[in-house]
Length: 202
Ligand code: GAR
Image (cartoon, rainbow, N blue to C red; front, side, top):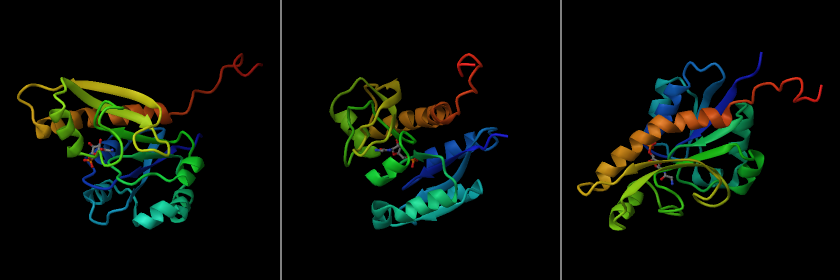
């Protein structure tokens, strides 16, 4: 039998996306959430993981930057893919090289708009309001060594209405995140079906 894909979710805060992902993959035949890592011992995401009996690990900022402890944990837990869900720290190159094209992120705007260092959570939606945007949405992308910069896998839009403020936009966008991020993760991480004989050159 084929081994399951083992996801590690990285989360720094509330963890509503982490929860949507843990829920979606709870009884999945091919993919499981095998751990949740955080840089923040107070992150509510850790409580959510406990509810789903997902093992957790907290490492500090320096350990995430130096990466050895992170890699050790990922190897011990046989992690195959990394999912960032509201994770605040920059992913070091060493980790990107160890998991090439195997780290995915979600950002609450239509990148390249309103992305980059410091653009996180409500700040993004406030910037959308200030700029008078008529639409916003989510971007799901592969992670490279720069903030919010890797190859885009999916973008889903929603409208910004005249009566909206940052909070109402955040709610609408978060809803899209919860609905679509698990599905995009599933497609991205799913193993390709076994090749047909002629594809193998037989
Ligand atoms: C989400 O909106 C996510 O897209 C955003 O942080 C929020 C985390 O919410 N991520 C970024 O801004 C990354 N630059 P959550 O902790 O409830 O999932």
